[in-house]
Image 1 (cartoon, chains in turn cyan, blue):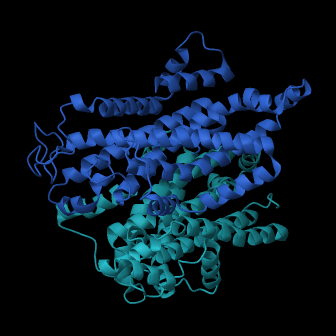
Image 2: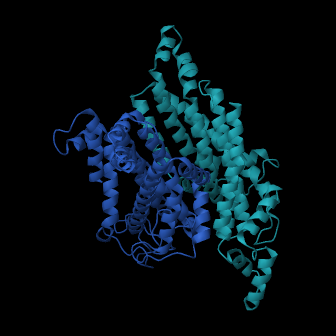
Image 3: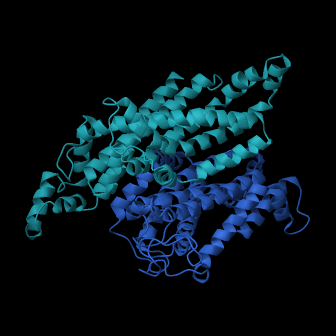
Length: 316
Length: 312
């Protein structure tokens, strides 16, 4: 088990190296890409010279691997360079936006678990009933409805019916926790609909698999209450699937934050990715996406390692 | 669609009993999978709507002032009209063309590519398998929307124009979504190839002297078809959702092109409260289409692979 964790930990830097190389290649390899953005900052008549000086400023005249090496060396020390658009350092920007997205992500995962687990359990212990059928339709609808449409409806319909809209001016959690939650709850609910439906489906199917196994029958036969059988025996052994899915869903949440933050005007990392990609601000895009990918990699690692704690049968 | 259903149902029966006659499998599917049948019917209706859009009482979805501006649903414009004076019903039907086209193109390319790579990895093993696996790891480690956004930023100026069939923007969408889904399909198929390789029938084939290529193509591949159909049926709605999400973010189809995602975004948003029909119908069409594919995919999985019942 220690060996397994060690192996996974060793793999993490290689993964990050591969991801950053791929991203760097995608964003930087095309000549003049980055300089073209800076191009907008200078007047058109002095373009040749201006481009040359911009390229020199950002080191774009160097070969690819020199550029990448320089970027990676600085990134390892927490320095992601400066934004091409406004020439401000990227790292403080990322640092101020990271907690915003982390809060949204955690709130979404919390809602996912609170809604998804009970729905899945209820569905599984009453298979084939009307309630089960209803919940199945609800959950399959939940995974089918696109989050940006749900978000649109959340903003539009209450405004029409009750002239109610979510708060728009974002306030940080440390400044005003109550109003902050009033704002963040809506994007979180929007994102949690699909993930909760997904989790409910997995809980249902993995619990149904174990519900008829021998050891569950034994537990019943020795006179355990149904509640104890379901929660202690069936649910616990289904936890592996559930942890995996919640882990994978965190990835979906990270991607979904790009959309939710844009719609609800949350100044998080997702919005930063979107803005920087659209405005071709490559240094910012690269840094923000790498931070996302890093979080995703770590979550996956934690998920895999946590299997061993949930299911003692698994020994790596 | 009928072809898929038939093939699917036929495969499902193989394990239980041979079909008495052609089409019996389809009938069984219809009887046993009510929700799946509803899904299939919805898919067929959506497909007809998209293909026959020009003759279904539509007007030019990209023209200006074809219809009155921002008029609510009525007899002549059942879904209302939008800000540019376009009929929303026409936009929804033509938007279906884009979604289905890009969804299908993506799924076919990603499924064939993923399976071919999986067979190759399973056949060559060793370093090739390892290399493919690590590349897939890296690609899967990016949330799909982020990766598609990056690809879009990187490739958007260097696109071939495929003319009428696939506009440059749509080609880019297909490429971006394919790169996101191919590694996922590769991973699923690779696991199955390895499982099949260890099966006794493969060993028997090897014993009687079949070559590795023949084993791969004649023995293992046919056994992957059922799983491939399941994977395709679950990837298609995901691909459609990704396409519409990218179009929603403004990095999808060309501006003005009818698309369910794009019609919910941008400047349209300012009119949603005063003209909710322009927000409701494209989203509803998208949700129903994805739901239909999910219902059908679920039923297909139940029929083809009882072991996976209820999973996703």
